[in-house]
Amino acid sequence: MFQKLVSRNEDLRRLYEKGYAIGFDTNNCLIVRDVFYLDGTLALRRGAIVAKLVFVDKEAVRQDDHQVYFAGEMPHGLDGKPIPNFGGGPCQVHLSAENTDVVVQRSFSNKPKKTGAYANFFEKIESYVDQIAGPAMAKFGRDASPLTHKANTGLPPDPIFKFPDTLSSRAGISDLREIFKDEVVAIIGVGGTGAYLLDLLVKTPVKEIRFFDLDDFHVHNAYRSPGRLEEHELGKPKTEVYLRRYEGFRHGLTARQLHVGSDSAAELAGVTFAFVSVDKGSSRSAIFDVLIAGKIPFIDVGMGLKRKGDPLSGMLRVTYYPVDRAEEVRAKGYAEMSDPADNLYRTNIQIGELNALNACLAVVKYKEVRGFYGNNEPMDNYLFDVSDMKIAS
Image 1 (cartoon, rainbow, N blue to C red):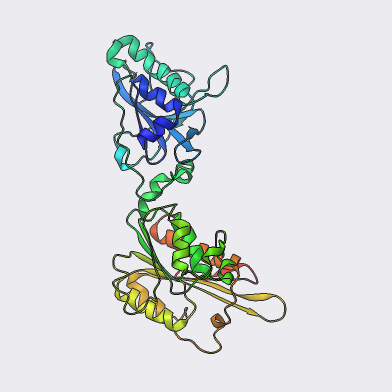
Image 2: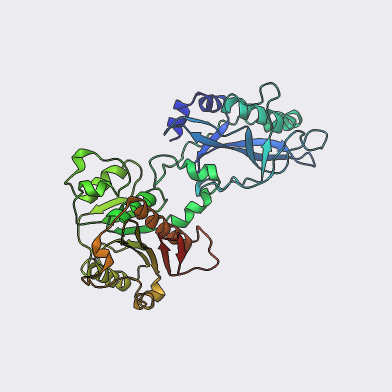
């Protein structure tokens, strides 16, 4: 990754060739170590500059803005005063475990006077280094030179995504990725709602996703499925279709064309969380049995739509079954465990936007359970009424 970034981006290459101790972080940051500076007592200190990378594609990058972040105390000039015209203030930037030696403490905001913007990373880093390290070099000479030629070329590839996760880094939430780093998620059923569950979870930094479905992909599936339809997909297994759609985006995808039931414990071994998206009560009951026996927490989704007159009405359901209370929640009867003739689910009215909403509510609940989202009043069961657009427990 280091070589690709340096070879593809001339400004980064110039920093490297000049001798700056540059490196990159998987949270999409440029790091420049060995930036020496003077503290308030005029003692020599060593810091690091961090700047965010905005990926244009897999290898070409541009600046986020004119700011940088600094790992170190406030730099001072030879007069013992803080370097002037450095805006910003105390802040943190979370870097990956490979760069724990760099602890960001503050941001700096210093625009070039003539243009108001830096042309590229080379100009930006040179400007900040001149101002931060200049006094140190004036006092200590070559001992304070930032050109140490100690580039950190060993950035490991992202173990999950095949493209940089610029969404998390731009939002400043890269540290929350750690919540999901050991998660192995199963999706049982990739019909309407299950397909949207897969689409959302593919973009979530879980370690592994296993999805299961027995059926083939037909035209009606395309009307409640994310992504574009390719004619050659019709008639092929859903698992094959969706694996092809997403395998170019991330690692850790496993697709199995099978019916998950009481004999599926081996396929679910190692799973840390599961989503159940099936429309038969009897199938759901067997799936619940194997998940509860395996002590796997899970979320079950359901949709009951009916038509009386012209408008459709009905409910979407999201139910969470924690390991320690799964049987208790099951006993409350939120989800059908059999196949009665008058079951609303058997009408099989499926609408794409409601499938997507059902999946969104389920993934939000999962992320709440794992601590990504907060919730002051967590519930096990959520019902969304299509008629009044309200959620109730």
